[in-house]
Amino acid sequence: MKPATRSTATLLVTVLLGSLAVTPSDAAHAPSARDIGYHEWTSSLDFLAGRNEGTAVDEGALVFGDPTGTTSYVDPFGDGTAKTYEQATWESPEVRPGFALTELIASWNAATPAGTWIEVSMSGRSDLGTGTKWYVLGRWSDSDDTTAGSIHRTSVPNQEDTVGDVAVDTFVANDGRSLDSWKLKVTLYRQAGSDQIPVVRSVGAMASRLPDDKTVPVSPNGGAWGQVLDVPTYSQETHIGHYPQWDNGGEAWCSATSTAMVLDYWQAGPSREETSWVDPTDADPQVDHAARMVFDYAYDGAGNWPFNTAYAGTRQLDAFVTRLRSLTEAEQFIKAGIPLVASLSFKKNELPGAGYGTNGHLMVIVGFDSNGNVVVNDPASHLIPSNDQVRTTYDRKAFENAWIPHSGGLVYVIHPSSQPLPPAVAQSNW
Image (cartoon, rainbow, N blue to C red):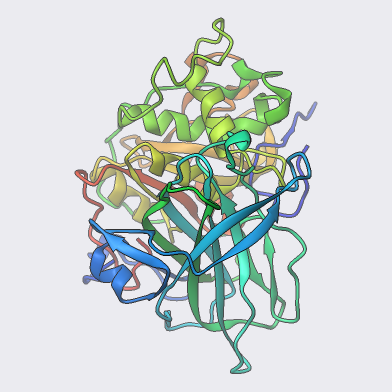
């Protein structure tokens, strides 16, 4: 069982015996009380607008240029040996979301060759008008070849101060506190003496301030009723006991399994060669591979949200974490042909037909039936170890209330650049 620092990262089953804003359409309209804004940097002009210290911009991406210094880093999950890394830093312009944010989640798409890694941090201006420290939101590498100088990817615990803290992957302001603006810092590292170049294709963040709703009203038709995407079905339950070093599969792999389903929908999953390390008796090795590639060694789990989207980014997809205000907004993605990985929490009797309860679980929204109910690929598969049990339909109101009040409508958005996102709403959250 995972730590309870952020309860919506993995499925913890309780088996009971009893961009540019445009004017939104009426269907996509959402109450302004749910303040959510997403902003990213993903082009040469974007990166040149930031402060580059040793970084350079090449073919639309941020790259390691000339090092500005070195740092000694002891991987807390390694052999205890300090390694020396050269570093270069990019700092974003300040973003003013237009509301007093209380939470922020960063996302990035990057490539880190062996011996390189990146650190993503955020700071802001607090409600008292003072600048905050830099909070580390993740230390990340797409390789786990630590013998070559890569690091164990990790969140950073114990950062709390008088303004806020980082709960695994999420900056959370303390009660009664907020930020009026935010900015990101990306530090690129490579082992001293190396000529390897880490590359950042995009970096961004979702900021939010949400009401403390216990329930939400059912949302109106968004135009996707009767539309279902052909996303392959994989059950996390068929992986129970797999690879203890990556948390034993099963209920701990809901996020990785959901990510693997979406990657294969886009035909962007790993090759047989890439999954050759997996036990050959495993029918769906791409799930095990995803768990390995998203694993957060400090959190000791595969449910770190931006680590999942960062893995998708290594598969040549565009991927980020955001929040939606309703299923009406989710329908816009289904109409655009883009499935969503959604984070939910519910008691067993609150989502009829699921067959379990959870304080945090992820599943894939793949469409809607003709009555507007939500068609999903639920990797928990009714706790039955079968891919045939993954596709199911949940009541619209029940699903929305397991999703919006609990995770704030959190989703992974994963798509190729050739598949455009739907038009953004006025307060752009994608």
